[in-house]
Length: 212
Image 1 (cartoon, one colour):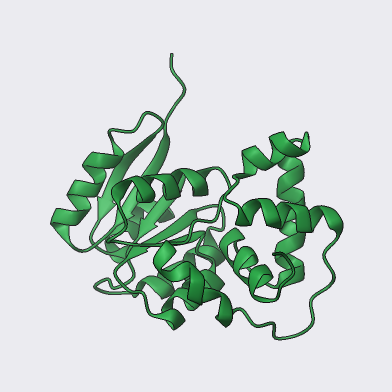
Image 2 (spheres, rainbow, N blue to C red):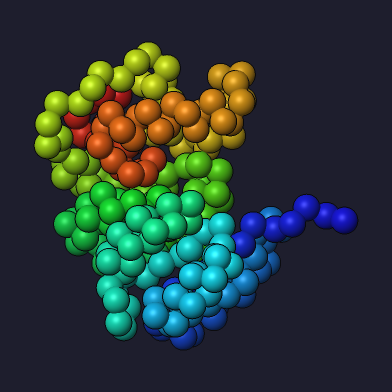
């Protein structure tokens, strides 16, 4: 029996895009879209039943609860759900708010599908994808509210690898450590940088020149 595929849910109110995206995801060998919804309210009963997926692909401009509030609520109630934003909104403050709320990455709908698929895989493996159209300017918003606790040498090394596009598994292999060890360092990094996700950590570290 083959290895079970990782599951993706889509919350997207535009039906044609939602269905097209699901079909393309289901062509992949290791992930599959097992549910799709037009609003958070429609998805909520399934989420509350603990049948939630490995990754939630989330639009922001939804009927009912806005996507930013969805991220905040899910990050608090179900922190093990990876949330990848996929939206048309490239407003700088919106990007900043989404990443600070706990989004694992932020992509825009006009990105090529191959980039979207790559972003899904990156999040599944501990990466932090940011659409190229927003990555350059989002960094300026990650200003510290208070001085950070200093990062140690290994934490800086891991942040640099994340910034270069390495996934959690790739980092573990390069450092010759277990993925759980990388997770331990990432949790420490999040606490020190006062962020909730790898995307937030990379953006803040680049903004404040903790890494080059």
